[in-house]
Length: 136
Image 1 (cartoon, helix red, strand yellow):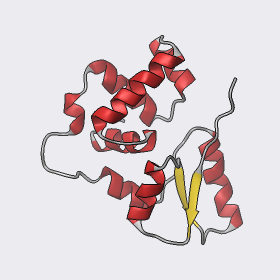
Image 2 (cartoon, rainbow, N blue to C red):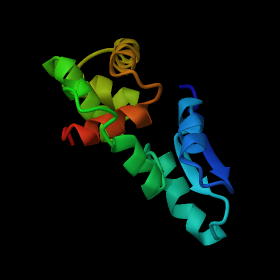
Image 3 (spheres, one colour):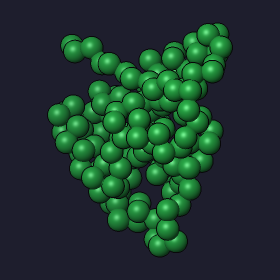
Image 4 (cartoon, one colour):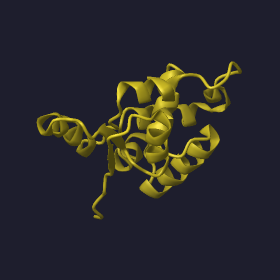
């Protein structure tokens, strides 16, 4: 079994664009550098548990609709919606595979396809899309 590496970006800058860039680069969370040491432990434990950790202003920016057209989730079929819901719940690939009765390899392939279809680059962004679409 391979060990999973989780990355969290920590910065002194509160720029939403910088936060989004960190997430697109693969970070699963973003924390302010000004946090006290004891404030960093709960988010780090959440990350280890499979959760994404984001400042409230970043989450608001991610879930804010980018346009007034139909929601991007309107193009998803039922299986893709179910996969998106599981991703948004923070389920790991192995948990999704068990839930959907698929191989982990198939789940990874379907997840990559879903991210492309949603035009996002991370599971965190996909979870934000799910929240915005009311799928949670």
